[in-house]
Length: 414
Ligand code: NAD
Image (cartoon, rainbow, N blue to C red):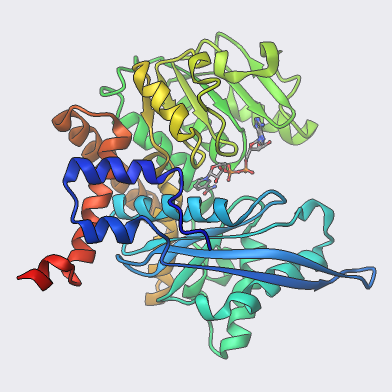
């Protein structure tokens, strides 16, 4: 395991400097608590054996059991899993959830596998990492290319190995197996609530325009909610292409078009160079994969606001360049915290045995997102800093309080 700090640790170091953080806490938070690599051996449909590399990282469990998704993607690696687990750590802290941060991944292209092969990978993941998972230890969820079915196989495998039901050990399950209403909408809806709560801070007009990269689960829900609130969605993209209309696009019609045609391409005029960053829109919303805005293209961003629905949408250098240019960036650990906030409700529901209704879930989600957004904006204004720095200062302080209360060098010197 590499012991060198991750790129994203720059966000931690800056918060630590601003807070004059206890040296022990800073040292603890520079490194993941535990990182495990495994190999999943899978008997394929044609009788051959294939091995898929897999990882799970608990970055921190200072505030509670680790929480974070499992990603199935051919390019996932140990470093990416650690980076995503770092982000989960500060996201759960900012959202005031009783969780630490974790993440998992398998280097696999699910599109190349049959359903049975995919099931063997999912069950193999749990067998390989069984000792690390569990309700009070580390609670996985879906991420890119994993869904309710994959998580149901995982919960079932864990239950078979442990000999007891493992409903609260894994979230994102189908509703009939203990999943929660509203989880699908949670990330996009939560991001929309954050933007609405920050409207004044971000200096957005009532009909501000939005360009959304990645019209998938989170991006489409976000587009629908902003459209319903009266904002204009002028551009959207998915892996098929990018489309634009200055008068605004109807996200519901775009969704129907996408499901009939397999992609958004052709729904409206194509965007020049297929590059949404350059589109004239007040707000740019990355909602596909990370690293889309970096130091080579941050100057192309036309609008004054970026909302990071995807994790690490901006590299550290890209984010710094945007901030230098005066572009407001709503950081991922705030913008996309709706997903884990509803996963938390699923975990609570599974532990108490009570079933929550959709209205109750959305009321809790909306209130939490608004509370977080207002706290971050107010900290940014008080400290005269940007939203990401403010969000990290709040999150780091909370984790520091937990670590310090367990005893740091200051206690030993007394
Ligand atoms: P998804 O797979 O449903 O949607 C992703 C969309 O991005 C798809 O429409 C795909 O076509 C599009 N896309 C892929 N490459 C693209 C490209 N180069 N240009 C434009 N579009 C492209 O995924 P999702 O669940 O909506 O997640 C999106 C992002 O949000 C991910 O980074 C994920 O980690 C993050 N996120 C999601 C959740 C959640 O609950 N869904 C929670 C937190 C963070």
